[in-house]
Image (cartoon, rainbow, N blue to C red; front, side, top):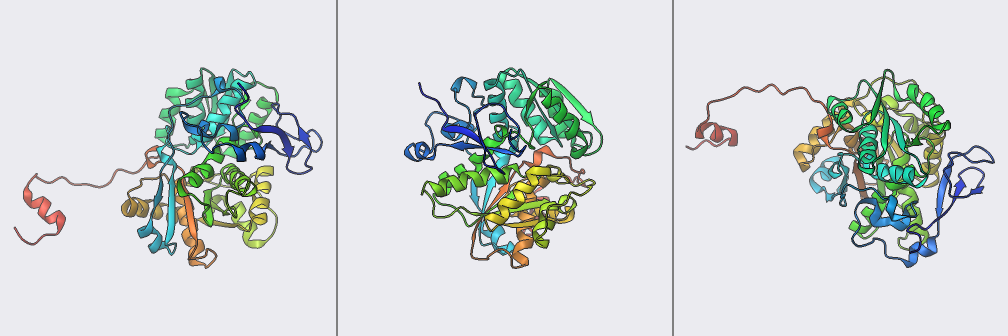
Length: 406
């Protein structure tokens, strides 16, 4: 049997030097970030999806895993792509779609990249895989590592929600609980990776890990039958936006779509380095961040990955927005009441940021927009609502309906 993958080499995003498809985290020539290059002619000649496969492996030729024996899956199905005309009309985005990633096994988009991270850890002979996380990536990597029979050694910050922490206690081989923020822990983690103690399941450097997130775009294309005008992504390290746009640009190069959608970065106001650089027209500047309810965006120093994200947004005529925590929480409630989706705050950030961009006139009101709702609200902690019980009766139902008759 031939290779499952159409991947052919690694290429530096800065100097364009090519490298063999080996476990490498930086360009040997200039130290730049690497991306995986695929044989587009082979992809163009093959069906987009493979029957009988689940998860990212429906698009196996688009993934960097050459032997199906290394695939790992929990039976993932394509996540829903939902038209949201009521919410869209209220936000000034009448042609709005919601890509709801909360339907994945751990309730978050991270499951897409965890599948490729763990499969590639197998491919390159590692017995452990790890990540630094505010919660979702840690629980997802640990889950797929357990499924694959590998050690999941993850670093999660102590301010994560109780739901995520409980999940980690259940699935992880080892958890390092750290104080501070993501930026504080990533440096010692990267040193452990350099010593090859574990496979890098993180978002900062590993080209192999992030490929699974390309399938967000591939699924939208498969479900919609075309490219939307805009794709709105939540941005922490930027890997979902980068991976999604790589898939769209490949579809464009193959002639399957006329033009890739314009990318839109959505961040918390607390960690809005991309949005600030985009608005100013200047370079990306790290910032010291505090707490944000949108934990998945809580990165103040994106490093080289952030610079690449900003570069791709500018190259592809994209946009960048942000939302304060109170806007995000208001959008979380509005999404639930209007469309019936209970999303976590990180999943509501794209909608909140897109709504602000629409109000400011940056987002074309006639455009077709797909917003990623990246996580389920069941991954969060919420204050108990103030409720008072009543005696069961027909009358309490009548009053709840606002009916005046008996």
